[in-house]
View 1 (cartoon, rainbow, N blue to C red):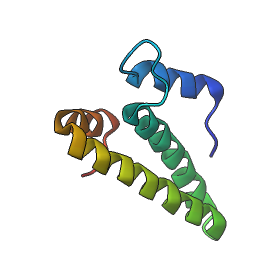
View 2: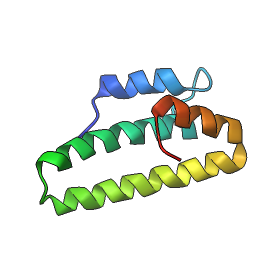
View 3: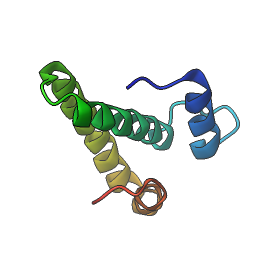
Length: 89
């Protein structure tokens, strides 16, 4: 459900755009995707966790807003990150 420090720094290294980049849209989308995948696995085994389901929906909508922003600003980066993270359009 939660993301470890090591996994988060690994994602930052993988998706950063510059040397000091830790918060670009690409990095945020990658971190949110990792959290969404973990929470999805949790909810498969805990079907009545409605607070967790609400949190999942909030994470998905936040990622959707970031993806919409990225699509508006730089469509090629949007397509690249969708391909790298295996996210449906």
